[in-house]
Length: 452
Ligand SMILES: Nc1nc2c(c(=O)[nH]1)N[C@H]1C(S)=C(S)[C@@H](COP(=O)(O)OP(=O)(O)OC[C@H]3O[C@@H](n4cnc5c(N)ncnc54)[C@H](O)[C@@H]3O)O[C@H]1N2
Ligand code: MOO
Image (cartoon, rainbow, N blue to C red):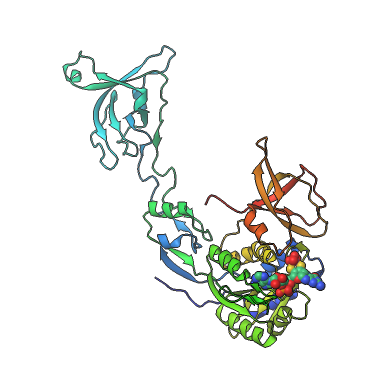
């Protein structure tokens, strides 16, 4: 079922205006990062539109409701090992006399093909990993711990059978058995609303027999680059021009976040053209992201457009790179769209996206907040840092000659040097109040790559 309702993704204009007008005590020269992040949180609300998708299509989507397990997992008591199952009462007490236990094998339980007869004390069955434990049995001994031989001939019926000998002390009562419901009980929450579904979650859903799940509809994000000097890939690079790279990094970051992207290309440094672009973006998207035009140059029109077409919540932060980041809203006929005006410098785009837009967009998508883990690591060199702003340096985390992990900046940290992002494997986050870093001092890093 595909049922994306047209519920507004953003709050009503009045709610947003109220949130934005709460922005007081704002030092326009050095609004701390944490303060700016809090302002953004106050100004946004999650979208409220759900669609149902098959579990394979749910990868990386955001779960829109708790998933309650319809069954026990495992569904029945089963063996964790290939071996022999029996009742623990059959074990000879481990009384220090090293008394072995001898049990008669009376059948086999395969995974998917259970042994259905009763198993009496003194008897055992061969059992495979995952096979159902017959009623009354509670213990499995792995096959490599037992010896198998013909049973003692005192009883003619027994002599025709095979027996196992379990050496004393090999196995404890209840060992190697997986109990019904021990992973998950029927009626318990298997996955919580707001989770970004990962491969393990798809497997878990399948293990519960669930074929479809409700997910949040994708967030629609429109983006464009501004600047008369920008040329798109495939165009001739005239003197004084640069290729537009920001739309590609933005495309990649938005795709990774699972957004529906609306690429609006390059818009000239012309107020009329910008106004048309902003209005069209606000009509079609939940959020708008632009790059460039937020500084103080003669052709930097973005903030004026925000003030004309919406509201500016803040502009300029105590951070580097990304200082001229602008945040606010752009109005449209139906709803205001959340707006991030990212600075034009290519690294500033990525840093301000990862540390501001990313969390906001995830929140709008209805995702549970999962803070990025900051890990303390020794710095492999001295780093100059001025207190009063947060710095995001591109770092390489590696083992040193002694096998210890340490981090060093990639080299020149100019916010136009995009190569610093491609060479780095982590971001070194130097907090607002931090000063110079000495060799061996601990700094906090956020890794770029994760396992899943
Ligand atoms: N007098 C001041 N000048 C500047 C300040 C300031 O506070 N006072 N801030 C500097 C900082 S910090 C930044 S960051 C930039 C941001 O300026 P804009 O957002 O107006 O960006 P532009 O001027 O349009 O471009 C800056 C730089 O980045 C290149 N660029 C822009 N868009 C792209 C793109 N899509 N792909 C690749 N490269 C792009 C552009 O050519 C410029 O080189 O302002 C400083 N100035
Ligand atoms: O703060 Mo700007 O973003 O470095 O170049």
